[in-house]
Image (spheres, rainbow, N blue to C red):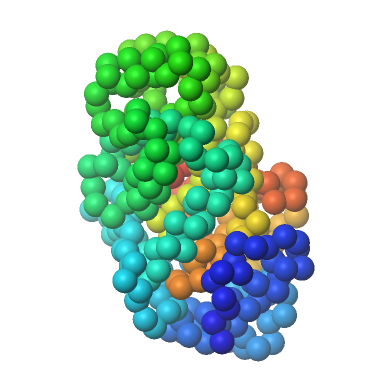
Length: 329
């Protein structure tokens, strides 16, 4: 039986998280053809799985070559999100049969970490994403811009001078603002103007998109902090294959909403998990993926810091350089 999607966002405890995780696992192990074949290949009897750490995580690369879908019926609100990819690489495709679940996920997560969207003006500097179709990030930010209901909210591509004027105007008005941008574009912006922001949060989504050399997070955030005149740089951790996001309010430490959890797998044994502060591959449980697959083994490297907080430390060497938050160390 399919778990009730309305219960996804009402998780309040570890026991409720485990119960929902197991319900979704049993459902997807039976109804998701690709995931079922993957479990069969591993000779996993889903009925015998009783703990979260016994659940096999689907390699994220499967989204490039297979249709990862659990639901059998598309709602009127269906979407196909596509990864940015690199030249000559295969794009990941996430078939989202009910995009209202994604909308609930990102709105509730935003409210959890930042409060009421209507208190903010949203400025989006996302040129690489705007120049292609099927970006889940653009879908989210576009909706947040509309929901902010602020006359100055909007997208920017390369009209930096207009954006500089807008930021300075909002600062003078003491308007709470979020400037969300792809990393290289934020660096381009502070090369044209240095700021002393007091009412604006700067949030980077990661990625140089081949425009600049990759940097370690500490170096990048130090440059951005100096250029924007802020003490911390916020970050968003998300990707095409996930319908939930984690957020960092500084120092690269990300926190998950209650319906999302990160585990760290051993790089030498993908079915073993590592304790806190040990570096390995990032596995994500995302209840937002109830209609695709909620158990994803990413190609990111990281470590658990405490409880449900984690740090992204880079990527596996043989993985594509793409997506959000590709800060290499």
